[in-house]
Each structure stands twice: as structure tokens, then as C-alpha cells.
Amino acid sequence: MKRLLLSAIMLVLLLPAYGQKKAYDRMLRSIYSETVPTIKVDSAVKVAETKGAIFLDTRSSREYEVSHIQGAQFVDYDAFDMSQLVDLPKDTAIVVYCSVGYRSERIGEQLLEAGFTNVSNLYGGIFSWKNQHQTVVNINDNPTDSVHAYDRLWGVWLDEGIKVYGKK
Image 1 (cartoon, rainbow, N blue to C red):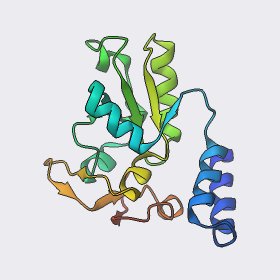
Image 2 (cartoon, helix red, strand yellow):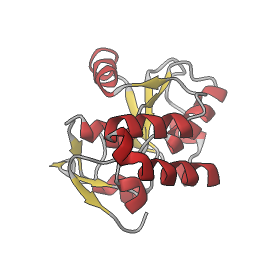
Image 3 (cartoon, rainbow, N blue to C red):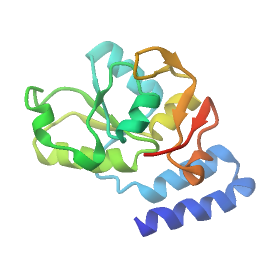
Image 4 (cartoon, rainbow, N blue to C red):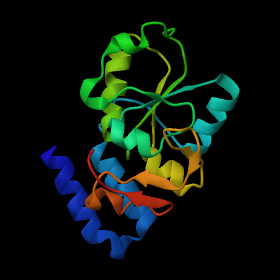
């Protein structure tokens, strides 16, 4: 976690020199272990449309309540239990996501270890989803522009929508 925080701080400081997109990509590469295949937003949309992919939101309940990808199942990083997915066939197309992809990669690792064979981590998380003008919905399933930005340090990576902060 210390490495994660240090990477984020360094890249925020480098943001003006590299440009937002390049800095974001560099930050993501620094925090991903590459233990779970990543999937870009446009490909995730296609997989959802053609293969009926299941999206798993690994953020906190507060983050999920503010907004999430429509139809996503909430699994909570801090309280994740494989029994939440007991009825899911092991070959189901699964896309895990969080704010930027760090927490979801950890959940993706657990899924792969449990024998799931078609797991992808959404590259850049819900921030990339919203930054690429994809729809998110609130707890009432209504479209919203609000996105929980985790905290002010991580919120710099969210370009689109309304940043919401508060209890995670």
C-alpha cells in the first residue's frame, strides 16, 4: 500500500510534464501487478453486449451507492467472500473494477485462484469508464454524473463527472 501511495504522489507531481493521459497510464502501470488480464473500456462494453459479461464492483458500499456501472454486482473489497459468487459458472465472462483498478486486481486474483477462467480487470476502473463518457447509475439505478473519487489524491484522475468525496 505504501508503494501505491508513493506512486500516486509522484505521478500527480509529474502530471503537468507528461499530460493527463500519459501520466494516468504510467500511474496504472506502476500499481498493477499484471496478475489479471486488463480490458479497456471499449472492449468491456463489447464483451458485455456480446457475451453478457458480469461486472463486479469491488469498491466500498458508499462508493457503489454514489455510482456504479449499470447492472454491476457489489462485492466489497474489504468484505469479499467467494460465496457471493457460488451460483456463477466458472467460465462466465467477469469484469472486475474499482476506482482505478488496484483493488479489483486483488479480487480478480482471488477469482482466478478459485478457478474462474474468464476474468478481466477494467483498465483504469470506473474513472476510465466515466472519462470515456460511459453511463454510470446511482443506488436507485438512475443515470448520474456523480462518481465517488475515493479521495482528493486519487480524484485528480477523474476528468469527467462530479467528484464526490466522503466516507468510503
